[in-house]
Length: 348
Image (cartoon, rainbow, N blue to C red; front, side, top):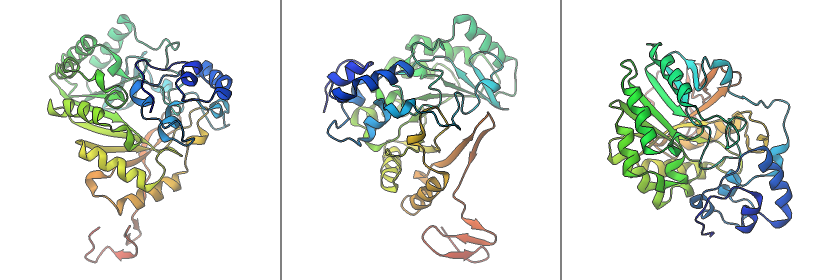
């Protein structure tokens, strides 16, 4: 276990911390020159440097395969740009918008679908004028019921800035739901302070937090305490997980993760199929593999612990659930094995 106080941001940092071998430093540096790198102390301490297949390292330590771009991969795999009427806003669905207010994160996932848009050099943080323009867009569109704050990771903002944003959204009557997408409670749990929690509540709206976590080891005691600070303040927390080869592509790992979420009072929400981000082919499973895992998971956990398996259609067409399907014509396919007619008494 590595004990660190500062975030690791360079190939040299990773080698010095024992998280990358010295012979790989040049390759890691090449990746770091292309895509942002950051490994927080909380994540570095979880990495087993003796395990070449460590699932935490796989998520955060650069891999030279990231420089290999498959023909089908895209710089903007889910079509943010084509659905962006003003800078910082993505209006893909009628009743909700993304507000991408910052372009930096406490950690940089090696599979990130916005990897071409985030990082210290991306210049994606909105200026005060751009924030005003984004809020004006929301005010001008009464169909917007929900605002989803993302980026980057909006929890890197100070509590003061979080409060300013929540109060600005609170002034828009037709916005009823404010949702924050973050990895912070897991990767930098110390940032979930009383001041931050209080700032989230300043919205006077219904506030949700969507927590991104991919492996049960991420839900440490410190992470669970950070989650508890949110939930105890009346803020519901839901999960987002990306299905990743070599990280969580086994039913045992997914079961442990989903149970850990529920035990921490986090409702499993989405299991995302890997997007076509550049240099991420080594992470992606097939949809059929994902469906088989969901089928197996259904046999092991209650509905309370089941996420929805989602595919974001490339080009800005939105998310769709991709199964598995348990109804074939008039026959229910029981995940425990064996078909049942829908006119029979069958409880799954």
